[in-house]
Length: 337
Image (tube, rainbow, N blue to C red; front, side, top):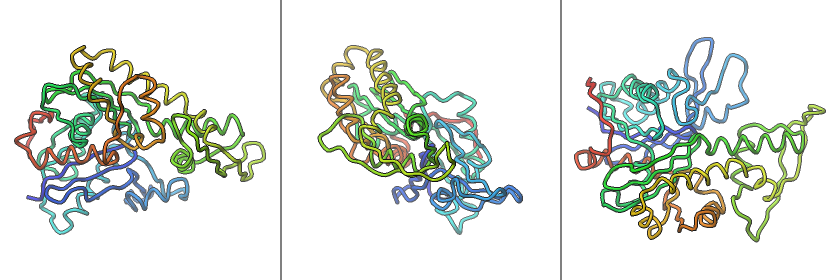
């Protein structure tokens, strides 16, 4: 029937974990489609290279926005393509599928994820909330009666949750994450330098120069874009401090969300978190100085997970490996195929 798989369906990247094999797919959530024929031309890395560079009849799209499905057909095609890569010769492969979703997802958005899973070839689809999967993947003891706080900063959403006894006690999902940081850099350069940047360049600036807290070594780099006045290409020099200024607003939103979640946490669990600390996962956890910033703002110990980029996929994968033992952390579905 095909090996069971777990999918971290992310706004920026989709990861697929196959039972017994680990994470086998880690590709950008981008699909390139020929609009004339409706044919899928490329998925993942190949499609991402086409972003902003396609002719009129080809469109490269990101089918997920803010952690949820924005383009249902493209998401289904993308999932089908990934499953075909894993089971190339098995047209009858009907795996059980565990899909991660944001904790703030609506019932309609949740149903769309399930439908996409079934249409892409699953015989059974289970849903797991991202903060729970991230906590399991980061190695936190989620089944014990102690408070574990996880902050998962992805591409579309930041998921913050306090977990105890295999359940989420309090959680907050905000749509300020990696994409919002990229957008803030684009807006800053537009306002301060009258320079227009593309999505990919903004992401490169964030990775190279982005920081959340001042440090001793400040770097500079040249950034190329289009001059909004003359319309010609132009280069400006940016420093780490400039980019930190650009990122201030979305970073403040993330810090405020962590504070709000701590404020709603029962006092016993808050005491546990004070001892154990806050764990950061997701691509945003790799931003320089973010752990320092949260430590400074909350007074709590902050740790970055060992493998922050794949924590959610590893956690969902653990559910696939030990299906019976971790069944209660899944949101089950009555529909069968």
